[in-house]
Image (cartoon, rainbow, N blue to C red; front, side, top):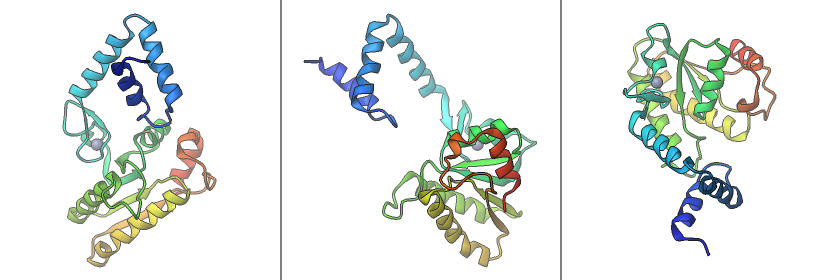
Length: 201
Ligand SMILES: [Zn+2]
């Protein structure tokens, strides 16, 4: 019953995380109903597509540059790297104003059955990058304390073991208490995140 273009739009929305077909249809009809919304959204998408890139060091978004503002900042410590699952986790840590290091966005958890995943690819880069550094590095494994997060942390430590044996000075730490087991980093308040960062070990 629906024109195929509209169907395509709806099915594109269902690809977004957490959006089911019903919600996707609601988005599409909202856009149709309200004049100017479609072209405004199209323009925004186009401008994001043209000007926003992913930072080549940490995969946070950067504007018109290969590196993001955090990686370019001379006051931030490039040897303390907070490894997070997703971009919004980094944003939450930024809100605490407590963290002065760099981030590294894995883009997902490590799935042992899928070695082609984004997280695997990015982790390989991180390991390579760490291998080349001459100075001591701390990697804060700030992954959500759930099964996938814990597995990913262990996996990362496993990958770094050979480097440590080669004499590369890497320290891995985990977030301290305050984050109850199973709590999503996403929903933790600023104070809890601040304490978790301070109490890392
Ligand atoms: Zn960056």
